[in-house]
Length: 120
Image 1: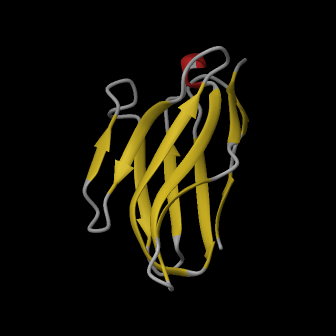
Image 2: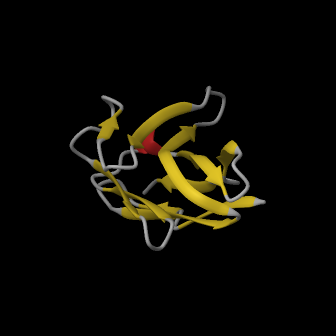
Image 3: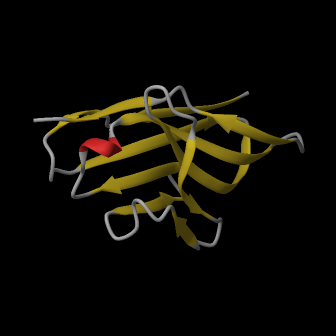
């Protein structure tokens, strides 16, 4: 029905930058709140950033001032610009969306994740 596909992960040196993308497809009427989560090895999944349908944003304290969440409504795509990356940012990053489908369902959808490794 609805799919989220992340891209943009990879290996980056400390202090570097990456931009993650999350493309939505399928039976979508509207994408409401969208979020980025991450899960480091051996740790629980944590919320990194949130963006509402009108563009209001919120960030975890650990990424404030370094990460920027944004969305392109026309392209049905979510982004996460990550700057000044640190080793502690190493994790699998997941996008999440609240989706209103063409048949009136409200779904919570997850992507498959993309690995970000910060290492020298």
